[in-house]
Figure: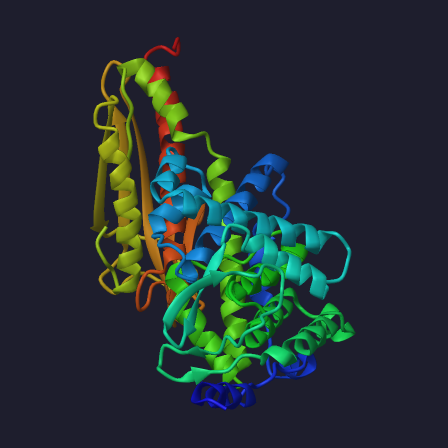
Length: 467
């Protein structure tokens, strides 16, 4: 027996099987109140059309599919690229093409995988080993090889798709330690046990976040395929949120370290952190869908700019400092997003002015306070010149929780709650999260579009209402 054989034998023996679902359930819980609160923000809106809701859900699916490959290091993305491709903004296809045909093919295969799990979730058939193997075949459809460490160094070998591994795939972790996955000869029985757990009465009756977190973790523990296990696990987890709320779970590549740390804690028996991670990402996804819907319900900025361009033959746009550290960062981010739009509208007959100040008063809920330095606000002014002279002003005030916890919201509020951007404290401390920055960008775009719409109506009226 060679030294390598001895190492494999030791690593195989070190494998720790995944827990039963009842064991998992007894050690974890889900904040169902937050789950219901977030979901209720979308339900019951009569103005949401089927088409708008479908587009919002399609966008988060595309974000999940794009970043799942980036998490595995198959290619690199950044927040802007994810936003561009997910929401199919102008020139998204050009930006994707610049990444190369391989990235496009991987992305499209991963998109097909999320479509596959949606069908799996809504088809009524229980999850089986065959469906998991098929999911692997779909998600890895554009990947022909994978890297294998051999005695002579790394080599590229053909990737067996839809088949359980035939060679050990234990790994060296980021911390430099060896981590054992299921031995090759144990993998079929472990997968059979996993499917049995996924069909158990306790599992079928559980909260979708518990289901998603467990299915994901158990599959990663087994690591049944030669490569692509992470992509399969994330897609499989989304089957349960798809079934519950018709949305996948979006995990951004920039969240990779937190994600792996939560999985590492689960390996040590602390399952709750991973459940909390899956819950947080699910709630992030719901908010992305909600903000996408709100944006879609407002006439596009281009429409309003087109009306103003009819008056001045061009188009326009619009744009704080920091209060109590985190709150000021949120206000500044909102201000920055508006300023970008104002800068683009300088030649459209629209003038934009953003200013931050103190003073004034507001009716503040007892759970909230104004900043210590006094009421802070961001004033947004859009105006047009004579003869179509008009002006629209909005003041956004910042409200801080009196006794801030991780889950409490810092708010930017227009007219004492008429329009509110809320952000959890843990989204801003120690740093602004990627999801929040995407949301602020959409919130700013919606506000800009609303103000331009109001401005275009006032300007047209000032000119006599004939245009």
